[in-house]
Amino acid sequence: RLAHARAARWLQDQAQGRETELASQIAEHLERAGSTRQAVIYWLRAAEDAAQREADLVALRHADRALALDDGSDLRARLRLHRVRADVYRRQGVADKHAQELDTMEALSERIGDDVLRLQVAFDRVWRLVLQARFADAVDLGLQRLASVSGGAPTDAARIHGLLYMGLVRLGKNNEAMPHALRGLALAQAAGDLSTVGQIHTYVGLLEMEVDHIDSALAH
Image 1: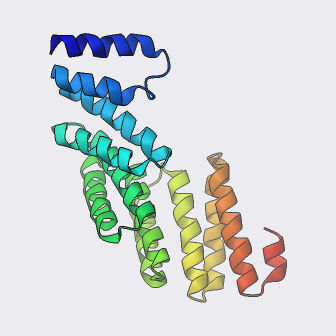
Image 2: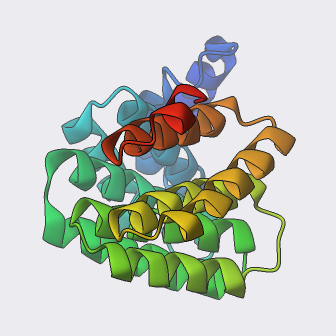
Image 3: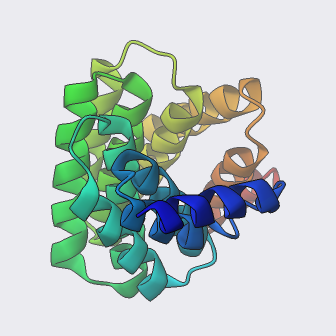
């Protein structure tokens, strides 16, 4: 164990800004040294890095190593690990496992009591319903989640407003839809979230063209 502890410290000293790149090696040594909590932190970093690169099998392996060691004391870290798993299963189209991860994330976000986390998980659920063409369910859930959160998560609220716009247009409720697009744009712009601004403009442009509102579409 002492040798592994020394190896972990040496890697940390050598990393110099490359700790994410070396995270899995550091985690391995920390785990073998018995430094479980630190190992979980580094396995998490390695899992998130792999997920960002869409190295899905590696991401799952690292997340599973962390979850096997986790004692449940850091709920936020645990939620991030399940986020990695959810993203992988979503990309792979494994619907049942993706749904299970969302259930776990929702339960954790409620235990933590964080509005930002609640809306992040809600976005995943609403998006899943939109993909399943369950537009009425998507709208109901989105409205419910937005109403239950007092504020403090403008980016995630903006993303949900964008999905509400999509769902309402698909239901033929265009007059109800546009206020959500405008609200989402206002929130995203205020938060400096240009990615969500672009997404909402894309939603509006494409869907307005589908329903033959050419003037409105060209404005986006």
